[in-house]
Every structure is written in structure tokens, then in C-alpha cells.
Amino acid sequence: MSPNEPSEQATNTFPSGFLWGAATSSYQVEGAVREDGRQPSIWDTFTVERGMDSGETACDHYHRWPADADLMAQLGMNAYRFSLAWPRIVPDGTGAVNRAGLAHYDRMVDGLLERGITPVPTLYHWDLPQALQDRGGWTNRGTTDAFAAYTEVCLDALGDRVDTWLTVNEPWVVSVLGYRLGLHAPGERDLRTSLLVAHHLLLAHGVATQRIRERRPTARVGIPLSLFPNYPVTDDPADAAAAWGSDGYTNRWFLDPVLRGRYPADTVELFERLVGPMDWVQPGDLDLIGARPDLIGVNYYTRRRISAAPTDGLPWRVLPAQAGVPVTDSGWEDVPEVFYDLLVRLYRDYDVPLLITENGGVWNAEPDPDGRVRDTGRVHALREHLLALSRAVDDGAQVLGYLHWSLLDNLEWAEGYTQRFGLVHVDRATQRRTLKDSAHYYAAVIAANQVVDATDDVAGKP
Ligand code: IFM
Image 1: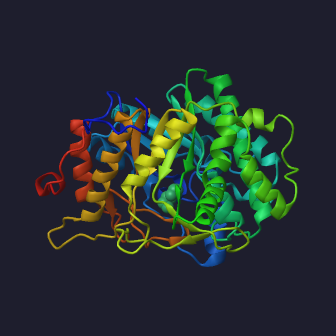
Image 2: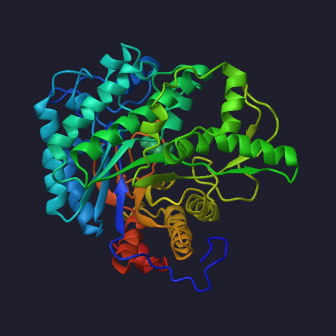
Image 3: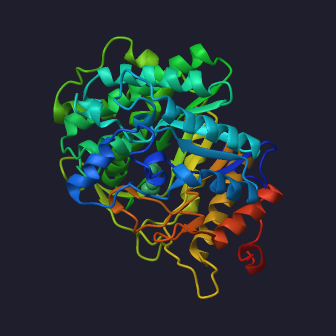
């Protein structure tokens, strides 16, 4: 069936063997930043420099992972996406391997498998060893060699039990927030540098893919990309052109090299006009980057509304949420139909298997006096997004699983602990975990392998 023909009869079901789970990342949940030989990452440095909330304690997942894994098993999850902390495993970025750091993940992988949960590790989710930053970080091409060596260490330690590897999380966010807007570590503000960094992150994905295929030929490898569909705010062709330009910046800049082995020509033309030649791209780079992965990790949250007004040096403006469209507690539009459109587009334009590696939103519900966390907004959004997902599957998209962001309320980077993304509420003072209504609802979906109604009975089990 063509993806453009809507499915006649929605089944609201999912393929057998579908992966159901949740996602986290090391710096956002682990805490224990000085334990067992871990050395600082750029986020330890950045949060101190800026006086921000830090990951020093986070959710104490480093110690509490067995109980957290029990919760996942209780909810029926059969997959868990977490990230390996490079500064625990190779604390100086290159050179000596820290066996104690590696042993932590070794135990965790075993513990997940014992509970029937497939481990889905991400090799890099933003906690670059500070020692590498001191040598230029991602602006230094040598960091990709360090990443290849670190990948080999992870493969040798865990590759006998891990069959799905994710490489570099959201290179767009790292390059834009970290290097153009200065909002994330390491806090730089320069378009040319951010493009250089984006290339090195893609190259890191390429070299890791190569190492995984050499050492573990039967494993699957993918890259989790933050994909923000861009919609013009009016019918004006200028807004449509601006939205396509913005799509080149946010989406095609990563999808095209990884899946087609080339950067999109229109976006290259724009960037070279703005910053000069991309002379950091070396012969052979795009062959490495473009060795098609086995899957694309889809991190989807919301859309971007675009008009043609030039802003901050780029030829478009991103507009705030449209009046009347529901928003999360962080103000992001909650638009599940855009999720459907995105998945169908990926199927149609790139024909690649997908794993939903992140999807969710901020709803800051706290426990009521009866102890129940009524995060009704998340329950509703989860149901609507899963309906959109199942419709996309019915219409031809090959989707391997759904990993909700996030398992736990955790450190939302520069936003600190002000934004709750979890299915599981974490009390900051006591670390007490409480399953939210959304967690109970999700468990009912997983049990049925089908989108079920969000009745109070299903969502609000004690
Ligand atoms: O918390 C982040 C995650 O680390 C990367 N993707 C988006 C999430 C929500 O902003």
C-alpha cells in the first residue's frame, strides 16, 4: 500500500516482537559522578560554570538501577535504552580503560537480561570526557578516533549480550545548542563551528558503525536523530520555501548523509554562503557516514512552525505554539498527527527501519494527597502518539519498537529538574519512585500489544 493512502481499518495493534520500553541517558539519571573512577564530563564543568542544576545526584540510578529495572519489568517492558558514560569507561577520553566503570554496565546488562529486558545502549549521549574537551572536543577531528577506540572497548565488553547499538544521540541538538546557541555544554556560539562539530559527530557515527560491523556483524546499529518536522505558517510560497530550508537544517542535514551518503545540496549552498567552504569534509568521510545503518532512531517531540522572516543569521523564523493547539507544560505543541506524518515521510523518502528511541513530553504532575500521580496530559498524549504510530505501521512504516522518553523524571539539561518527562515520578528529596497514571496506562498497552482506552481504571491502578 502506498503510504499516502490512509489505512482502511485501523487495527491499533503492533507487530509481534515489538520492543516496548523507555529511555534515559547516563548524565541525566546516574548521579555518582565521582564514583568508581569516573572523571568529569563537559556537563559537570558546564553546570558548575553556569551555576545550573547538575547531574551530581540526578536519580541515583547508578545505585538504584536494580529497583528501576524491577519497575520496568513490572510494567511489562521488554527493552531499555540507556547510555554508556564515556567518562566512566575511558575517563581521560583516550588511553586507560576503567574496569570499575565498565563493570557497572556489565552488571546492568546482565540484570536487564535476567528480567527479560533487551538492553539498547547509546554510546554517546552528550557526556564527553572533559579531558577531550580540553583538546578541542568535537571541533577536533581526533575526537572521532577516540570515539572509535572507546566503541571498541564497549563492544569487547558488552557485545556478546547487546544486539542493538545506538551511536551518537541527536547530533543536531549537540551542534546547535552546544555550539551555535551556547545553551548546552560546552556553550559556544558560532555557526561555522557548529557545522564542523555536526560533521565530526556524523563521522563518529560512521566510525562506530564500521567498528560494530567489524566486531559484531550480526548486531544492529542505528543513530538516534531529533527529527522536528517543519511546517510553513501560511500558504505563502516564501514560508513554504523557508520551511523546506529549515527542514534541511534540522532533518535532512543528518538523514541525507547517513542514508544517502551526501549532504543536501540546497542546505550546503545556504551554509557555504553563510560561513564559507566546508573544507573539513575529507575524502572518504561520506562513504563512512553513508554506510546505511540498520535503523534510524526517531526522537520525536513536536513540530517547528516556520515563517520566511530571517532571524539570527538564518533565513527563517521559528514561531511559538499556534493558538488553540494543545501544549505540554514546557510549551511544546502536542501534535500527534505530525508524528504520523514524520514516520510516513521517513518510510517514503528513505525506506529505512525505524526504532522510536524517544517520544514524550513535560507534564509536571505531583502526587495528590492519596499518593497517586494523575498525569492526565501524558496519558492522553501517549495514547494519541501510539495511535499515530500504529496507523503509520498499518500504512507501511517498518517500526521495530517504541521507547518512551523517559523512564524517570530526570535532569533536563539546562532546564535542570524543572521539567518532568518521566513515566515514573522521582521525589527529589527522597528519591522515592512512584508509578504515574501514564506508567499504568503504558503497562496496559504493552500487555495488549494494542492501544487501549485510557479509562480511569486502566490509568490509575494503585
Ligand atoms: O532530555 C532530552 C534527551 O536527553 C534528548 N532528547 C530530548 C530530551 C527532552 O528534551
